[in-house]
Image 1 (cartoon, rainbow, N blue to C red):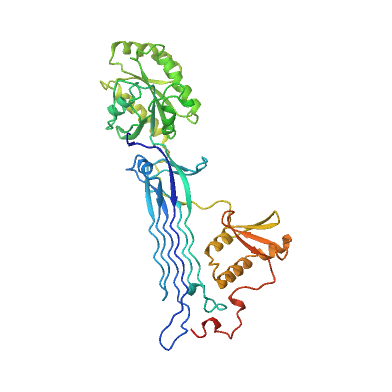
Image 2: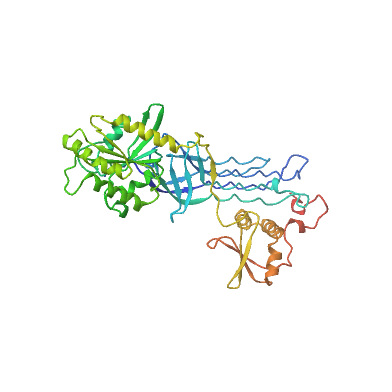
Length: 453
């Protein structure tokens, strides 16, 4: 089996590191048995980040290894020692990578060297009992759990960032033209579909420098899935101009420069999004006598259609200087004020939940509470510790969930469901029950749970 070297679409599963748990600890030293809480916080989990690297031209690394995980944060320790943060991982991607969901919803368009997207944020580390202490809670006997990192499956799709896109039938000479006007050295042979990956070259015309890319295997019907062109048309979506490369020396029956041009224009129109790009036409292979005659014959018809036409030979380099300068002028016109692309950092967040709000709805007699805060607090709670459960109840009441349930008509004994459907926690609604460390009866500054320790 051949090992692919160019991959422009991959499905990638990414997992952020889990946050470390906080720790519940009480400081002890000789003659000071009740030194107070000193449990440290857990470390945050590592992030999974995509970063644009101009030296990377393919997504092949993620084709071979399609799951990437950041490391977990460490648990906190006593004596106020925080756990170490998990190591983040940075995945290098080519300039022009589109990040989307499996359903096709675009999450980000990564353009510009250094642009970053945090696709799976690490989970927060849990607070230790030292951080949870307050005036009313002098010595918490619990700590918060670390949160799981984000986990999602994404699609990475490469759209080559080139200034000029070369379009034409197989064996029209696109790869030879790229090689002739740049330092690129694509594979070239005398049969169709020589090029199985987009060829990208850098062209210098006077003081102007720009990039050109060809679309391999484009044939009539490509927009409907025929041939290879449908897989690669995306690579000219970002181009400022389109260059039609027409084979004037073809011996295939039923083909001529005008019909070839009409077929390619039909495919571009069917694909969509390219009608506004300026077009040039290169009549190639005029080093062949019959091809030169044919080029001179069809030139007036093409110019009458409004095209700027160049008769060229990628083999003998005839006409290439004029062509490269004309392309450079089109690219220069398309470039607005020469402002450098400023690298940005984007962090994907779960959608549909507001950090400061919650929603409640009744479903089949059960009250479902949704919201970023309550769902996050559920994940932080150690339900094996009664005081931790009481602390959760205090937090939920503080943002008004209990009052909202009463306004909506919730009754004592009703089920209250908080969390995701597949991992929810169910409470029995009883607004008359007090919870939390605030209800512990003791003299100010003392905590009966520490007595005898």
